[in-house]
Image 1: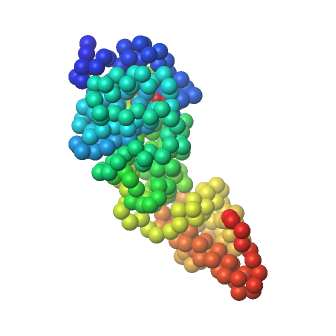
Image 2 (image 1 turned 180 degrees about the horizontal axis):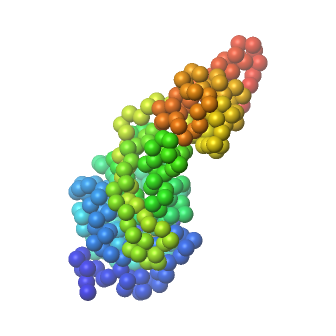
Image 3 (image 1 turned 180 degrees about the vertical axis):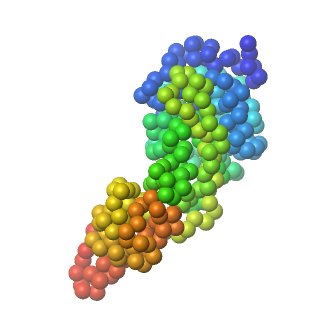
Length: 299
Ligand code: SAM
């Protein structure tokens, strides 16, 4: 039976193009067009919006994005076998689908989206999902080029993204996300919805960029969270030794109890630590300058 968009069923597409799923590419395909339409709709009205999709594969979500009214879709796919299958969708939706064969971890997508609102919507390859998310959170300048992201992760990763301080799931990823975005789990997708079925349940997560995140250097936020959560069972006065010779010199100005552990500290606390690190290193450099010595060189 033909689908609503009059393109062939995805099982036929997969068979004709020899798209047997490859684990190395994190391939778990969604073949139910009702489900892909639900994901597309979860991203809000798409009229006039340019959508960036990572990993379209055989194109189930791509088709939903186009039939839900996206102005156009830029789809980045690493698997050369999928490109011909996607070409059939591009022909059907003339001028509205650009397919880029490439690696989403390295490509500069902003060169392809033009002006107007843009949105990232994807059923991500699980093996690089977190790396992609961290990359999109690091976009400069901020606010970013996208007005929201709607992304599918393994449920366990989604729980880490939206975790609350004090919980087992609260960690570096939570802090980096919630510093710059408001994140919410929208709904779960059963493992049986995918072909092949992964081992675990998935979740669709929405990210809305904060227009004005608390001010700090992203690099320093990454450093303090890496140190603090790298040894999450230790007190901060011990775990922060990897970034500062005297952690108390960071913890005191940040107003944080030196015996607290990383998982007790809200995002604002890590921002204060990142700023204290910046000040302390600025002092080291200016002290050295005042003494006429140099501690310079790139860090
Ligand atoms: N969107 C399709 C769907 O929902 O059925 C496929 C999703 S599948 C979980 C992930 C897709 O990402 C695969 O098509 C895979 O080939 C692609 N992929 C894997 N690594 C990639 C990378 N580095 N850059 C771009 N695409 C990648």
